[in-house]
Length: 218
Image 1 (cartoon, rainbow, N blue to C red):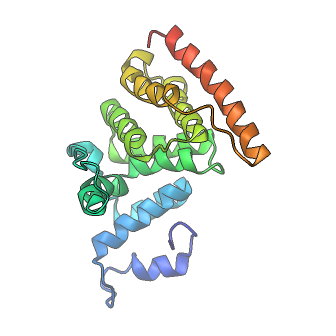
Image 2: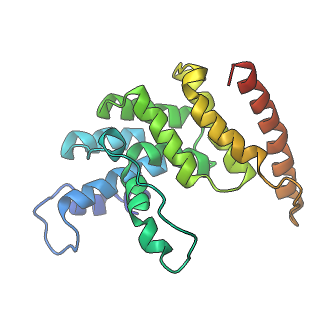
């Protein structure tokens, strides 16, 4: 939270002084939380500054498989069953960067592109890592919401247009998102007229996006 809201004095105490006692968490956990907060807020400059002082934690995207969904439909044990998947995503700086764009309308394409380029430079993500991160983010983070779909499609456009990913290399993710879009209940209406207007606009934009990826062979 301190990293997200840029409370520098608190961060200095919590993170930059590893010998400072009195915390329930160890220094490595606090460093992990620091970078997650900076990425979630979309702060590439602060990320670089703290990276030079304390180092960057490793990302499970690089060397760990995403845990399978073992939930069999019962809600009673869902929290416990979902814990491995939740921890994986919450520790991933790449998934955080992708998710922050999808959910935070104040972060534009330029800033998320800077974040992705910075993370790639600092952590050495391969293209396979980037695609895996996007697949995990869509699988775990994208809710059944038209505006989320549109922002997720925007991330895929960043990969193909700005980072020059081949469209066919993104086809698994494009199809994954496409199935969610096609299967969405577009007949429901919102009581809030402004919200309905946004959904209608998103639906039109998503239809164009589906046409575009089909023209690119997906």
